[in-house]
Structures are given as structure tokens and as C-alpha cells.
Amino acid sequence: MARKWEITQGQYAWNFEQCEEIVLIAGYDEIRSFIPPGEAWVEEFENHFFQHGNGVAVRYVDEINAVRRRRVVPRLDYRETDVFEYGRSTNKFMKSEYRRRMREEITAASVDVRLRMVTQALEEMKALLPPHITY
Image (cartoon, rainbow, N blue to C red; front, side):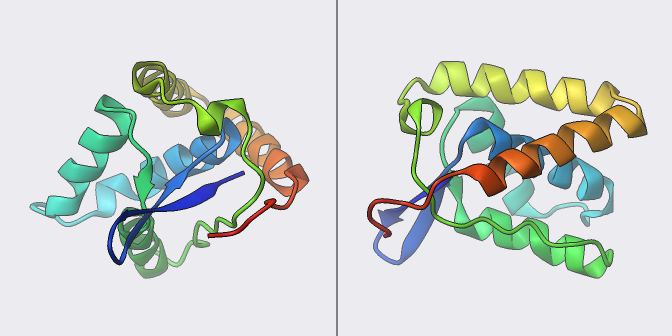
């Protein structure tokens, strides 16, 4: 599932598998319109995640969860697991393209299709193996 790593001292990020990214994208899209205007983290998150294909800073997941908590919707929880080819890949262009495509698909999907996508991604997340070494 996810590999946690240190960006700089005391700041951490996740390298996600595709199923985790689907859950993050759908969860973010669900609350995006409820984020107060002018929040600096929104532009930073979208730039790093969708444009540059970087890992996801833990603080961005925390910010998304803060908005989800205010909207009284379940938080997005991630745990360290074994990392596979996608999560280990350093091809940021490929990741940013995948993320933008998934965002378009999720946004355009009907409620039923979106729910199926997220449910399937959550099932895939549950099936991921534990990590060999945790951070």
C-alpha cells in the first residue's frame, strides 16, 4: 500500500499505490468545494500531487481529513504496507498523468460508478501485504 518516508527532518510523506490514490482523489474531490478560499495548502497539494507526481505529504492528508471531519464524513486512513511497482516508481510524469486521468474519471462518474470505484480501491487496500520494514 503505502510507503512512508521523511521529506525533511520531521516532515513525512507517503508513496501510494494506485488504489490508495483513487481513494485520496475521490476523498479530496468530495470535500474540495467546502475548503475555505485562500487556503495555501490546496494549491501546494494540487501542484505537488497532480502536476509534479510527487508523494503526498502527511500534512496534506491531515488537512484533507480536517475538512472531512468538519463535513462529518469518514477520514482517509492509510497504513504502511509492502510497496509494489507503482509505489516504488520514480516516474513522476507517469504518476501525474495517471492522477489527472483518475481525477477526470472520478469527477465525471455517476454516483454509483464512483462508489464502485472507491469500494474496489478500498478492498484492494485491505488486501495489500504488511511492510517488510516500517518507517
